Image (cartoon, rainbow, N blue to C red):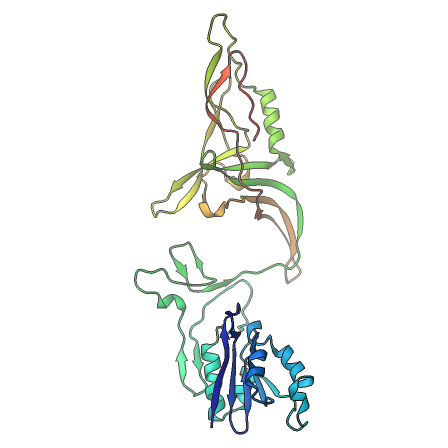
Length: 373
């Protein structure tokens, strides 16, 4: 007679008073434990079925094998060790895949079918492909233990009408996806040159916008120039217009529409696309000069000056993003040396404030207070 006992069925974070995955299958000749998650050893001791003949682990998630350690001590030092040696032999330990290949009796196949169908695991199949190739799975046919073939289609094809398809590792732009998988070539070791450009993307919650701060700009000799130092030199060469002197009997204050920001702070204005997606668009800000307002333009290649520049809103998280550009050198698989200009992104330093302020009142005859970012 076949007896099936559920010792536990909790997830990886066990439920109170319940063990993780573990099932006991007993016949007149076999006493088999399928999975041995945390807490199963305690339940097994309370059930006291006697020494096991077989242990089958469906897969290597810890909540399916963790109690193999106390089970080892039960065989070596516990109550089972007091029984005759012929009864307390070490049970056979199998992986599910090996067990199915070596056992063909109906009871065992039913148990393994249950363990493999209802286990919360992924089946992983390794398929060798060439680096830099675009591959697509033509068909996937799974044959179960009863010899029944089943064709498995892509998960994206199972989406209900009007719902977005679920997928992983696909190429897309948020609205359309391509089924082929692109396996890009990956370098093991590279030699990086000094930073040529560094742009810090950050959010300015005070102004409800974003900024691209050109920390370092590529100079004429392919050496980085400090963005703030370039701004300071510009102030010396082209200072802002002088403030009108105070007039006796005149007003003691004057009104200032807005302050200026450093030249290396490029505004990013939030905009909506026709499809409803939120973007940051590179904007334009003007600075005062003796000849009139002068637009402050982006100078770094990262910000693509001279062309419309957009960046996804989610690409600039609350922590910001620090983007660098530098020369990179590496050897390819054939031994050839390759040199190119590479870009890298790392987390920023959090939100920031440009010093941009509006509707200020300043003392007559005095320049407005310089607000440092």
